[in-house]
Amino acid sequence: MEIRRDVFQAIADPTRREIIDLIAFDTKNLNAIADNFDMSRQAISQHIRILEECGLVVIKKDGRERFCQAKLEKLYEINEWTERYRVFWTGKMGALRKFLDQESDALNRTAKGSSRIKRKNK
Image (tube, rainbow, N blue to C red):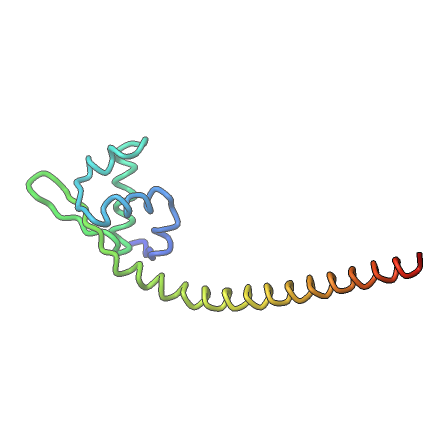
């Protein structure tokens, strides 16, 4: 039975995100990738296999070497999905900022008014 993986699962792990960063602009062989981590080559191969299953990496063989090439198109899908929520939350945070500014102004006006009353009573 084949495990179905998605891009979110792939990028959830910091090691896999780092692997993507390493090969985003330059194809590298497995040994060159593994040299950047303090873990076994087998563990790195497992991470790369997950990235490949998710469609974020393509493995190309050249003789005995296996080279990893990033396929970042799927990350654009994530960006489009998260963009909706960024717009939503940016609007909510803007409204919260406006509300807090109004509350702060009201408190400042109240504090100034009460200090004037205290001075008049003296």
